[in-house]
Length: 81
Image (cartoon, rainbow, N blue to C red; front, side, top):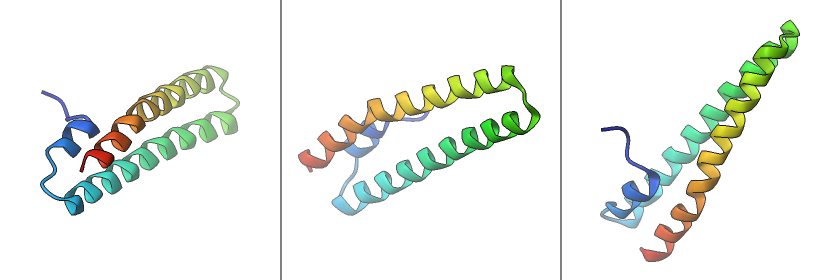
């Protein structure tokens, strides 16, 4: 089985401190994943590689949609605790 979603991880958090750590780690992973895609976009621009630009743009869109979809779950779990 793959990695658990942020809402699943927050639901199992034993304390507000643990939940806070989970959110910080999640945000850091989001930033890292996003910056990797931006680096890919920058390389494609430098090489004037239109195909790579299209691929990286699609990847960035997917990364952002995944995380923005999770944000309501993060906020909801925060309110429950």
